Amino acid sequence: MGKALKINSGINYSLIDDRDVFMLITTVREGIKYATFQNIANKIPFSIGEWSEFLHLSERTFQRYKKEQRKFDPLHSEKILEITLVYNKGMEVFGEKEDFDAWLEAKNVALGGIRPKELLDSTFGIGLLRDELTRIEHGVLA
Image (cartoon, rainbow, N blue to C red; front, side, top):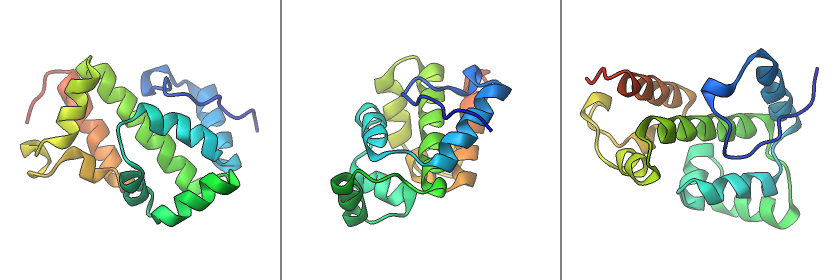
């Protein structure tokens, strides 16, 4: 199929072409190593508790993955990549990390009065955030 994508926090929807999609698929199938996840988590301001909620894994499981330097299974690997892509899109749209982080934490009328960060636990929520960021990018505010 292809090589796995070299993951860093720089992956972005606008930079992904068809070849990169196959690389993402390969990466998901192979699983993301805990060390790679840690690199991503260090750049995105979510606690292990929040990542635990987003990925539907216990904090104890995270501790075990770290200790054993395990790979995440494909479903969790895919979610990690989706969250990374959305976060990078938000950074691109807002321009400043602090502004995007504040947006993630603030209740949002366009999203039904909930904090955008609360939607990162499902693929549908991530898609909704991606759509909202695209609207903001194009100046279409709800």
